[in-house]
Length: 227
Image (cartoon, rainbow, N blue to C red):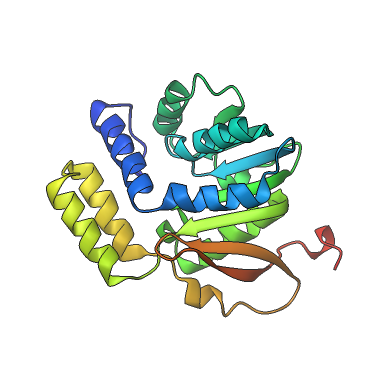
């Protein structure tokens, strides 16, 4: 999944499986929890979804916004061109979403965002690169940031192995799900970052739900944040 590849039936099936797993394991529920807090009726928001995959989170946001009469515009980025092509095909009824094949570290939009989301992505990075990801998305947001990812739990290990042995048995899905379970998000290491030139970011555990961890993240550019 992380390697460049063409659009195939296997890739489409794997992305469909991942969307289903996201729903079952609480990713959608967690995002909705914060949408209810952050998107107010009759309001508006400019949103970035990082590593969007097939775009299930942006579509979830638009569905919520329509129900609550919130005006949203979402930029959704992913490094894989084939994944973005599939996401666009699934989102023809969602004109509020623009999909881009782009590298986060090279993403420099003309306007910053009210909300930046990064769901089930950070565990793919080394600790040093995870710091860079958080610094970059912090610089792209004027207000809210939500990072939702996996944390260690015995029941999660059992559940992932069970569903990939009985329900989601496609080779690509099985490999991706089990590797993600092994990698997990390293929140304790990030908690030891130096307490200088900081801003807030919400890091929420898929396993623990909205009982989230709020951390302070060191900025790469002190001049952009005036104290």
